[in-house]
Image 1 (cartoon, rainbow, N blue to C red):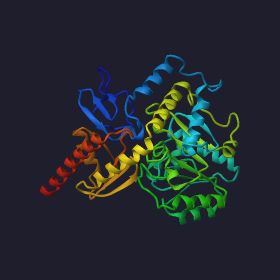
Image 2 (cartoon, rainbow, N blue to C red):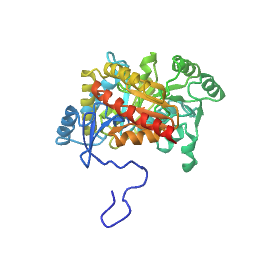
Image 3 (tube, helix red, strand yellow):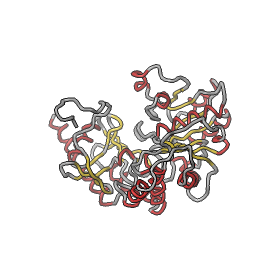
Image 4 (cartoon, one colour):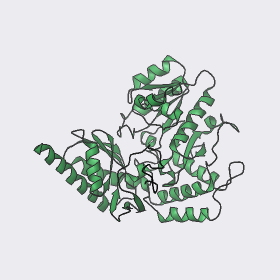
Length: 400
């Protein structure tokens, strides 16, 4: 919004959001400043996995804010060890601990920064290269931008940090070639590419990458920023392949809207860091971790993994039957509908006007990532909106 008496916003022009200004939310619903209600099937970009203003999380944050919000990492934190143990158990599948250690930060980009630094420290001098995939997205800091496999995003900020090699996703031969070409510290991959269009690799791809990493003494880093914490029907997407990564990064859903991220690593890898090697002023503060503790508690109590599988099957089947949809990709409640034309932005705009939030991740691809507690009725309502807007789009094409 513009300042009074000025035609220029005080905000940097890094975003170009559509008109609705949202002022309240509850569960899967958002309300704008005009009082109009919307179904949120973006979920804050897979962040509010328990829905907006979840009462348990809201109460935990309010209580902590009135008790102790921040002290700094110069002193011990009562919540951090407890939450780290829970994360370690979820990385292990939810029943047994995985035997790793956790660093807390404020975002997914920072979690990936931590992972990259840790891998380089573990590997030692001369083995700093990180192999990543084309089409990937790992963040917008300079290092995570360099790791992101979208060269067009590098151009305005060149030169980006060196040491990152990009290969085609789901192409095991290209990773083998990259690892054989020169020593590498790590391979950094999303188990499912989210911003790349919800791209699911071949069933044996990640297992073969694991084998190559072992062969070449490189770490395997799984970026679970978008896919983690129940979104794909498992606590982490790598668990669908019985994979054992060396480092796992997470954020988004971790605090159900509170800015927080984490980097988990096997204990022997985490041991490469010593005091002063890495840090974050706000990372792991009591306020953020109160949200994480409450969020993870609700997630386990509500069996969000099972709910994501069941609701995802209903939503995926519904998407597949919509006019103009030629493919549905994804897992659980991270799904993409590929259209038969490059109309994704127009479809998302028409859906917004009808009270439904979805987003276009590719010119021909719509992504949906609703809260994991979404109801069947809300799924059916969202499908009804998409049915109308896609049918209207087809009708307009026929008239043009």
